[in-house]
Image 1 (cartoon, rainbow, N blue to C red):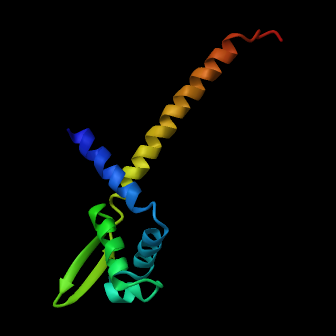
Image 2 (cartoon, helix red, strand yellow):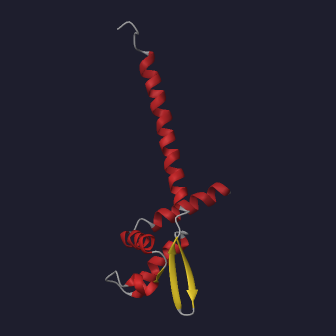
Image 3 (cartoon, rainbow, N blue to C red):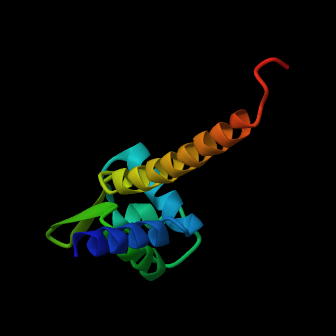
Length: 115
């Protein structure tokens, strides 16, 4: 069950960062720190509603946190979920390293050491 939860979380993260606007929003938040939604929207030629929808996708993936003070919504980047993506890539690299080691082993077994 835990593996399925991790797979679902990884899928949400990758889905969230698959869109250029969301990647840009995340970059803005990392560069500027906590930012009001209206200030984030000022960087883009789209409606506040459209920006809010992008932020909700980032929130669902856990890549941003929202604090509400009165009527003002502050959005802050949270890069902890990125560790799941890094772990997944590390596992992929590990699999390839094992396969390459095995290939090297097979190729060197057929060599004559006196050549």
